[in-house]
Length: 259
Image (cartoon, rainbow, N blue to C red; front, side):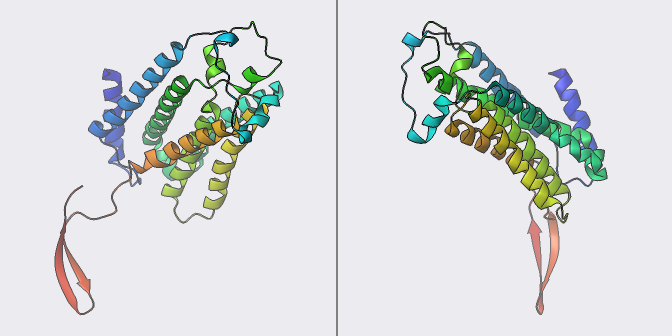
């Protein structure tokens, strides 16, 4: 806890020395970071406590029609490719170092990225451990009847690979857009941010690890966190205090109160 407080103190001090679009405060970011750590620990504990069961103990439910095609899919190559897409997604924010503005704020952005990943991991593990949805291959006729069904075999909903990929990619795109609101590269950055998690999700379905609804839910969760967590740190563009406002043929005083 002391190490976390010291780190946040340094980051918040640095944030006051730049013109970055984000603002950090020790009190608020202790709350955000501590909350993310707490969610991750709860999710981890829940996941570890999901017991192994046999297939006879599992109430197999036929998935909705739009999900059923995934039962017949299984590909180790697609699973390995999805791992690769995930690693690329996690490294995508490193592209921000090519901008002088974002490179100079690496400590603040690193903390912000960490908050996004912590919240995403926590929510993902909690949902997985609560729903306990069997993966598609468990319902396949080829799955051995006497093979134990481990906790990871009941972690289909929602897709962790897709949620992490979306959280990382949308974080990168949101930060780039906030630092460079007039850049002509914004459509391409957002296209990359939207496309890479979609590819990751497609590969997870093709690998037989997830249903379509799993990756859609994972995409939505990760994208929301990657986009909105940075928004919680946006600097106010409004000037606080007493101001003189001039209109057509008139002038008046107004006062903006601090947030």
